[in-house]
Image (tube, rainbow, N blue to C red; front, side, top):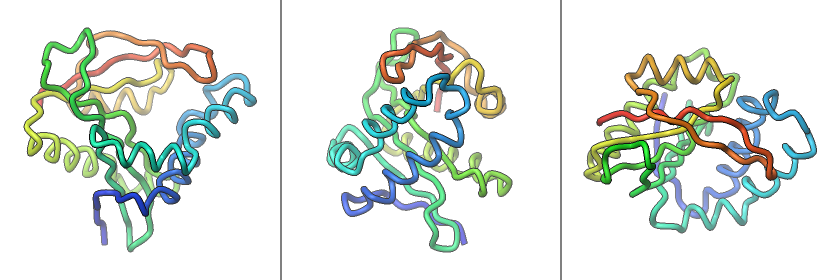
Length: 171
């Protein structure tokens, strides 16, 4: 059975671990210096940082469960704008991660659709996100789901910049 639930502060440990593992699975091979990767993981996916992020009312976290097992999550940043995104009523899909072992179940489309519907209910009209330029699987996924390339940004991992595409979609 597949379920999606809004994360609570008590889910911080689950989200921190999911974030750390899924980031390594999806991006770890792109980070040249593994020391930089470790420092980024420690800073970005600590339980304390995750708990702070959950408590921030400008963030919405959703956890994806398969047979009661947490296998992925979304971090949606509410009221987030970008200079290349036309709408001022937009949100940012900062993270949508699913454990590699569950990718073959094709849960990403369902999870993205659910997240878009949630954003619509919150009265946002546009969703945007960024993807590393070498992450071809993710780029294909977003293009297939009608996101349009509207620009670029540099994503920092321990001070080193990685070129990202900014995608946007009217929802």
